[in-house]
Image (tube, rainbow, N blue to C red):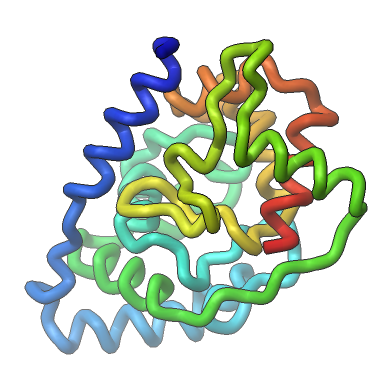
Length: 206
């Protein structure tokens, strides 16, 4: 087993143990978070987290633990990719932990957007990489962590139905170390742009 595959298994185990303390959040905080989601977040991420522009990711049905982790990273300015700096550092700067947990729970409960059609050839190629990895480059299958249906688990994000353009952009910023994600960097660092586009097309179709 190569080092990257071992890291992915450890990460998966840690993600499974992640628990959100949403039960400890007050009803007033939950209502405030729902109001923020519909009146503020929706301006970019769309109603119920189903955005229409690939600049802004789909949040509907995203794993709450992943959303919580990312919102805290935006707030603490530890996620430093260009779009995070431009859009989310300021938006998240005033969020407290209870609001973050409540927002993550709100979006996690929304109905995901349906998959979108794309190039049949790209989707087929992307599916193969997602399910089998690239053995010649010692790249493990994406489904090892993200699941066979790409729904994610715990702190590992849902990828199914996400905008292809957003997924490609994130793979590129991770590949170029503009976003710190050591395990994912190990996975995508040797992928070509064409391979990343194929994986993104497949995931967007789910």
